[in-house]
Image: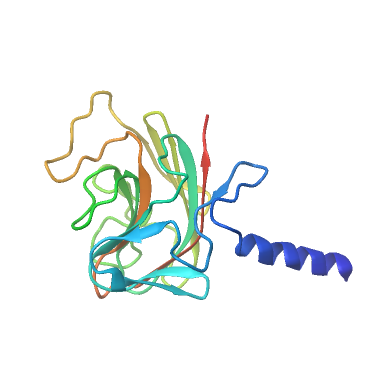
Length: 209
């Protein structure tokens, strides 16, 4: 009984750790599970809420950027848990930069979408390597992993690789509005539109040598 109690206490501490805390395996917690400390929203800040230990995207277009002391990141393994609702659309950006308005110009986006009309579904490296049938369901938590090492990007859902992409050497910007190139930067979550309610929690990253 004492051992079970100890394990439960450890689980509670792990779920409510301090942002910036690093464990023995090198994982850094990017969100404290309670506040927006270390994060900054762009336009329509009311689109972001915290409910029951999760960041909730729910409202007009806005992006929530990690602006804490751990940024920037280049080679890394990122992980968070995500839950979609029917018809919702969102995204997870990496190697991006804070901007006040609009869709983020810099970095790449990993799509979050189980049943929205956009054919690019969860796990897609948006516009570069798309997934049409991810192993997820609305209303159920799944783990999204993003690994970047050099010019190599891997996207995993619940441990299953759904995208394995190598950025071509000398790749030019996708357009004047979207770079879609590796470099370094921070992470951001997307509130896509008022009909898209999406949850994020247990956000962590590990730098790779």
